[in-house]
Amino acid sequence: MTLTARHPRDRDRASASPAPVPGRRQRWLTAHPAWPVTALLAGYPVWWAFGLGDLSVIIIAIPMVLRMRAWRRGGRPVRVPPAFGLWLLFLVVAAAGIATLGLTAPGTVVSPLSNRLLSFVDRDLTYLALTIVLLFTGNLTETELPRRRLAWLLGLVGIYATLGGLGGVVMPGFQFKSPTGYVLPHGMQQNNLVQAALYPGFSQVTDVLGTIHGRPKAPFEYTNTWGNCLTILLPWLLVAWWSYGSKRQRRWALIVVAAALIPLEIGRAHV
Image (cartoon, rainbow, N blue to C red):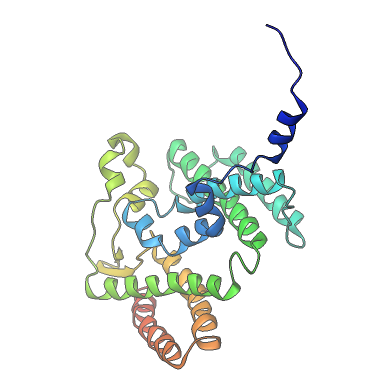
């Protein structure tokens, strides 16, 4: 094969050729840079209904990592919050906990090592995924994800928790098998942690001194998680609707907060 030099006119045409036009997918990503945050928060009931609520953070962290990798390749730095090294130290200590999985604390229920390992992997991957969510969300600009919109998305999950709590009050026994439960092999569904996710319900039914009680938990796996998320996320609804919203939004914010007190009180009474 013979290599021939290009004519100067050809070189000029090549240099003057237009830049490649971005595809539809690239244009959509450019127009919606914060879509993973929206998919995680606004779409949380879908994650829960599909039996993936506990894994939603881990799954959505994957496109976040890929996006931050693209940022770095394009020269956009990924900044970390102050004292981030302390959190990394916590992750190291949490990972080192694998050395204690074979031990049983005195007076506790003995569980199979496989159950402990599954819980350990799930918890540590969740810690790592939450770290990625923190970095991704914190590096989005005000234009890409306005703080008011982020407050609204967090408050929206608080609304979901309020509705789920009311559902737990009205129909405490409601439960269904998620689509993931139909495709996951039966042998992998024996773990209590897995079962809690694969069979979503409105309430966590407990036996207290021989009396059956239902404590609200939707759209989460456990009542404690529901209570924590409700009390943490509803204030963000007040930030979005009360501090920056219209008169109508302020009125709805008060209605949601008042409605949330009903399942909170019932859940507290059944502790």
